Image 1: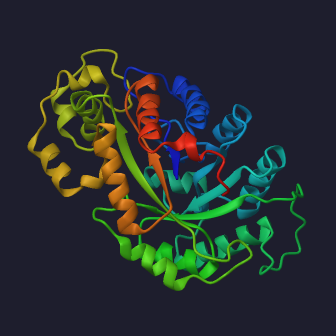
Image 2 (image 1 turned 120 degrees about the horizontal axis):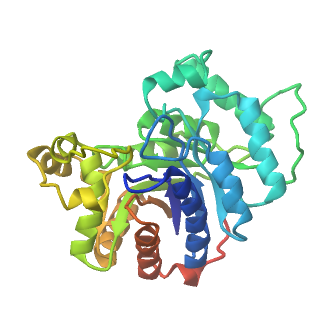
Length: 341
């Protein structure tokens, strides 16, 4: 089972507003390809991402689709009131019953200074985050939590909570709370199946789940040829290092965002680029569909998870949709469309 996590990428020759509209178009496309979920990430203060308010993109994507589950991947909970998050996603669940996921995590999602601006009253401690999570689950309807607040709107099927993380601590919390857990392998430097093992060992049945449910998040990029995948993928690798800024100098009309294909044509990979690829191979898995598909299957076996959620950042809405289409064909997704959650 495959799903999609969209980071709403913005490239230097593109427009942030168009990137948001492209995200909605992508939701329509991947639903037609047979993907299970469409989640939107949350980033702040980044010229390379246009997803500061994922709940708005999620609502628009839900309105533009009919079957695919939609949600956040994820709400950066320390920035917000748990009550307001619960109200927002319960409203989405009222509009699109049985289709809404509420993925949440603890990350900053941008420059550290943004955290203080988004919520100057946040306490950056483990205890404070655990308290926030407990309140959020209570406001979503968790029978283990006692709340005197009447949270509206009432819904027959509340949003499905998912805890997102990239380490053993978040895995442990998800297990103890009996929540589904999504492990962000594309952030981790190495394979970390131990995180899923920690989650399963710590898991306790809850009102949300009787048995553990884990998902793996990967950054991938597919193209019809290896050469095309390398060209598109280089935009991402350039954005991870400082070398391209020294090589690609525009005397006028500089715009923020990730490097474009035009920038790739003017760029020579540096030692820093090559070193990063060797040290952090899971930052991006790219190639043809059989090549990327083989690596997805290998990691799915290593982690022993039934579902993988994929994020693809490459210039051009058509190229991005094509990447997901190629993998949908590789995994015969349409044959399994409509599976129960």
